[in-house]
Every structure is written in C-alpha cells, then in structure tokens.
Length: 352
Image (cartoon, rainbow, N blue to C red):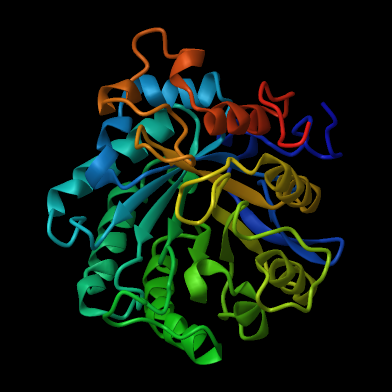
C-alpha cells in the first residue's frame, strides 16, 4: 500500500502531561495551536456519538483504551441539545462531568461539545441554557490543576435547518448570527480562564471562510471545520466556496486558527464507503498544516462512520483488558485508529 507523506508518524502529537496548557501563537506567520513551550501541537482523537444514545462509551475502560491502545490525546464529548438530548434530558450533564473526569485521569484533552444541530440556529430558544451550562462547568473545574485540558466547543454545526425551524443562512448574515450567539459565551468563559474556545461556522461548519473574513476579537479562539470524505472532496483550490477544503485553505491564508472537531470516512449521512483514499488526502493535508482533528464517532450504530461493528451498546466497554478486539472494530475504526497512531493501516484503500 502506498502512503501519502504526513500520514505516518506524529511529530507534533503530545499528551497534556508533556504539553501543558494550549494557546494560539503565530508560527511562520500562521496562527497555530501550541503547547506551553510554544511548540506546535496537533490533537488527534475521537468524538463520541450523541451521549443520549451511546452514553455507555463514558466508562473507564474505554477511555483507557483510547488513550493507550489508540494513542489519542483528545476526546470530544458530543452533548446533543435537541433530538432527545440535554434540553429534554438534563440528567445527561452527569455524563459530561464523568467524561471530563475520565479524560483528565487518562491524560487526554477533552472537548465539551454543545451539539447544535436541529434546530440549526444557536440563538434558538432550545439553546438558551448554553451560558449556564458552560459557566457551571468552568466554575466547577477552574481550580482543578488540569483545567487547561478542557476545550469549549460552543456550537457544533450551525445550519439552515432544512427540516424546518430556525436556522442560519449559508452566508455572511449567517455568520453574524453565530457571532451574536458566541460573543457573550466567550466573554463569560474568558472570565474563567484562557482555555481554547472552538466556534462552529455556517452550513454545518463548512464555511470557515466566513469566519476568516470577519473573525471574533479575542484570544485563543479557533473556528471549526467538519467534513466527511465521501461527500466533501479534497481540493487544491482556495476559491471554490462550495468546497470545504478550499474554504479551509482560504481561511488559513487569511490567518485564522482552525480545528477539525468532526470528520468522518463516510458520506455526510454517516453511510456508504468508507472513502479512504479521499480520507487519506484530507488527513495528509491536515497533518501537514498541523490542524487538529477528531473522528466521528464512537458508536455501535449501523453506519459506516461508526468505529465499531454494529452490536449492542455494551461493546463500548472493552472490558478489563482495556483493548477492543480487532473483530469488534469496524473498517472505519481500524483505519482511524491507525491514522491517529501514525502507523500503517490494516485496510486497503479503494482501487488498490
């Protein structure tokens, strides 16, 4: 199997115990995620699926497996607000606390994802609890010596909400709506520390170019890009506003900091594929640019993007051995584990 440059090895992947607090600094003219010594750092890891459906992943054996066997240095906790999520089941917040505690115990950075999806406008009434949620968590952990390991993701995927209900438009006005939502949260969180803050962008976090044109004033703010390699194809261009990689290239050239907080090997639906050749092109690009990424997702759901083969949710606990068996891991999961570790994958790319 042929490998693109930048897929093997992981020269900038470091754990919190070594890297310490994160911040954004200019490196060779580019605003870059760095560790406490000013060295560029890349986070690579996994995202949970919706905690309301697959909360079983929040267990000590799974976090140990992700940190040691998969060699992640970050995990993303996806707290849906709608879709039978936190707005109707506030008890899900306990899983976020548990997930943060397990991440800190396993030397992982942890992204707390306020999973805006349906409806697509983060200003919608269903999301009114965002400020209380984030400030409660920040106040709880701010005196913890590992507080720096927490990253705040304010709004997963602002979008036009084609299914109906409030959404944000796929244009500059849509980005202004996101900014109106994000600015007060950023102010509140800045009163509670300098942790990295991730802000979603319009059209399911595909329009980071809009954020680059009108960024939010402040320190340690990054903008998210989401892509699925079967739908969002690689591109060497930076002018095509319908192409996610082109928008990413454009935003980097404008100097903003980017974090790919969700990416997958399937189509955007979570199905078909996996499209590993395109995934390799994307990851080679991200690794070369030092852009951090989390893969969707830690689920036993019957979809291509899932890291595990379809099964009951108890598989999400690998047991006392703290290693998932090869036959439990899906083709996508096997591939992503290898790419996180920077080793040769055990699955073939299409056409090879």
